[in-house]
Image (cartoon, rainbow, N blue to C red):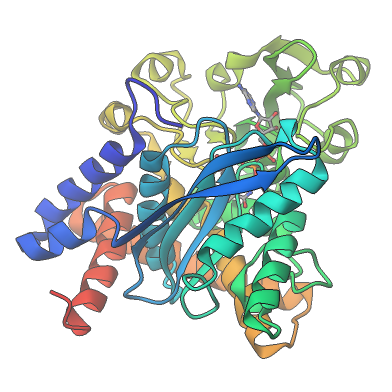
Length: 428
Ligand code: NAD
């Protein structure tokens, strides 16, 4: 979320401007791509269970759809801002382009705290969101998905409202639906596995067998769990994971130097990705302060929880052993840390490439919905591995060729693809 010192939209524009300079883009193309093409700001009146009406502020922002229908989640959050949604819509454009899926970038949000809404109120909010937007979203226009504090149930209510208004079945209007109701097998695993498919490519390039490496994670939610599973399947050793403890209102790091047993940790975590401290202690885990995950003597750090965790201050606390930062979360590294990491020879796998497995699988969901024919989990994961491996290989090749960081190389590929699309369409 936006803070006094960190405005995500200004940050997204800064990143774009520096690559635009590198690519020597003309001024018209820069103007078009450095801000969203279309913004909808609207209110949603919701009848509350007690008979009163509450009015919620909501957004749907399309950054660019030259490569295909816009794609991006809808967040429910009390601190949602138009600038957060703008930045996320822009990052979605680059994310879809870097993995070469034929979709553009969009994002939505509602300023609300779903913890304070009953299930019936949440349903009315979801249906209200679609009533305000139904002419603007759709399988060939703009395809929303779940994001922070929204889930498959919210998506299903939205799809149902859209179908009622449009008079037909349109499961391709929205992704992240439950399996059996238009959802795709493999979506749960997709982001975490995608993270490791890209990491695997990097390890191979660096000539580092996964089995000789150790890793420390921030977060143990959906992304971290599946990333940790696949990383250990490749032979890697996870020595620490940190997560939030709701009861103590702080985070802890759980460490086992001999290697964490991921199944064991999953069996003692709740649905919010919080590990039971007492059970972890009984199982022999050391319990350290939450920030300690970043100070561990490991080869790979995997931030998989929050934004702005790798800062100049935390860079100073990192072990000299760290070789790779694998950005599973969105925006975990502040822009002023990239140069510090480069000077320490730490390779950063950039977020919009590394965690693009989720949107890639959402694209597969949309394709399956539009065909009304669903693939096996093996087929989904095979296609996912192919997409992520190819995307990493292309980025790495360009980075080596032009002596760029992986982040800059990923931006160059993504922005060039979008530039080609807007030029071929004759927009600029
Ligand atoms: P999640 O809600 O399932 O898990 C979040 C985890 O972070 C939990 O384990 C929680 O305890 C932990 N956490 C929260 N505050 C913490 C703190 N202060 N210190 C340590 N741990 C803390 O979320 P997720 O779906 O796994 O997403 C994680 C990140 O990945 C986010 O940045 C998200 O935007 C990004 N992402 C997710 C997807 C996806 O498909 N889920 C796709 C792309 C990017």
